[in-house]
Length: 396
Image (cartoon, rainbow, N blue to C red; front, side, top):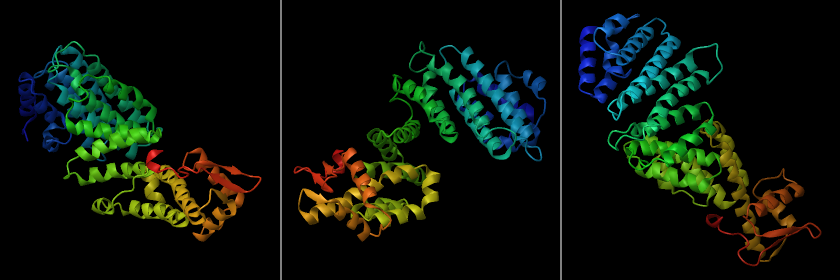
């Protein structure tokens, strides 16, 4: 594509003169076919580029050509390519600052920041000599510089404001912060979006990604109701053709809804190859603690990699609650012998729990509001409320 470097630079100039951000972004994208053109692999392209383009666009293009050159080496020099991409990002910041009441270059900013993140990830994977997460964190600093310029553009009209680029950048930053496990850095970004008058005007794909990450963060903060709302928005609005994305959303949405007392339909889980949660739901409903533990143990690696292992472990108290409710139904009395609960645990195959441990489990269930009552240690009994002793999980 483009043939010679002069043709390429002429095309970039044409896109710049036409204020065509989409075309300019394509010319700078590492995913475009032009990256296969060997004529563009130039180690020092500055003088050539300056003949066609004015600052700071020339800096962006020069850095891009250097990135192509470094990636064409054997083996590819990912660290130097990242350094040049970071330089391109800095030039984009200067371009944004120079354009008053204009936002046509936002697509260019999106492409440069996206490629910066990809190169940072490549460095993390293939390069040695630095702390894990260091390069990605530096990339996030570069993207934050773009974000600050966009967020500060409060004087332009709604059509021309650079604030329309905020959510795209926030989503990029989310992906970095989740990857390097620095979720606390998400809070000011969420606040900036929630206070933005364009909150509901951003493109739907960006809103879906945003809600997915905000829902996951709410999940980690134990704000399960908020997590369900955000993840449900993401799942409902994600088109069916993106089945892998919908499956990814469900991995977090399903266990959170189970914690709130909503068990998933088998047909839904079957459709997205998530029958693991169906097995967990059956064990939970039956109060089968041993079966629940077996499922978690068998899928431990998957749950840990997905970041939901601890969340699923919290479901175990609901399994205990359902088992102990069966004891109450069988005995039909509000004064239940603690030995009965120990016998129930042993009946479902949990033989390594002592009476004292059974006391602790029930005390936790009472504290969480899953059982209404108190333990009489003097009589070794659980005294439950005469009104709704096992409140529906949905109401908790």
